[in-house]
Length: 321
Image 1 (cartoon, helix red, strand yellow):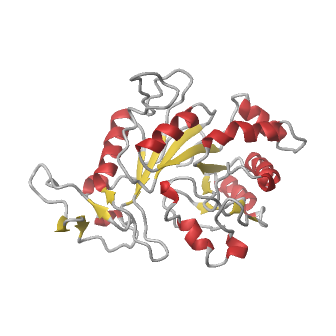
Image 2 (image 1 turned 90 degrees about the vertical axis):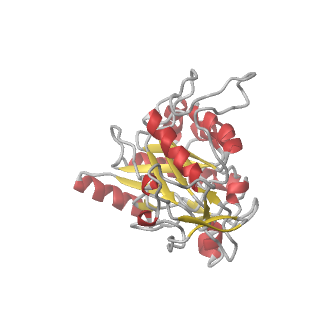
Image 3 (image 1 turned 60 degrees about the vertical axis):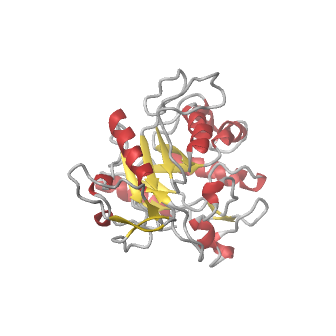
């Protein structure tokens, strides 16, 4: 749990449990795993059968909710140390309790992020058929009445996982859908997703939601990878961020560039239309390095090219600003 989070797009972090299991390339340098190694008894462990530590403090989110209500504002809270849709029998009761907490904190916008959107329906069905007090929340959600204070998000790292995860999310009822394209490991065309259920050469534009029954994405966070545990971050081509910003702007979808990561690179043509270089210089054959970036995560917008200094939030009824 962290009040006044250092994550630029949320106010606080709070996880119903701590610990997870890697499922795709984006997990390779997981910051939460690196953090957990400092104190696994408190911060959990990584692996399919490893320890999950259930949060003992369920009052702090309620306190944040009361504070937000008093101030007439909203707080964005992100469960940063778990995947809330991880499917393990020992997490069933805690997940149901979490749904009850969400219902009890209407002044908090819960930014729920998963790499396992395919688990949503079976896990909600279990809660809906249980005797837990969250039964009604799960039933309503399955009945296309999602919690108004949940932003449902998926994490992606490249086109392959965008094609897999975003369309599944699009079929899940949500007050707001968002994508964490971080760590970005390859380019993504959000306008031409190719989910497995579409035939032949059909594509799906997730920014407009043109396919029947699949809702659009309302917000995208993009960022590069950080170094973790002595391991070097994989390259982040700033053109991936630039393309995301341009796609979002064309569709009217807010984009939040979180960081350029510890290893930003760029293609060979980095000239502005007026001929001014963006500040990226070629040092060796392995890529382009930014000589001006001193922030270890590449998280200081003042050090970025001007057109990447984009930190937009969704503006919608009931959504935090």
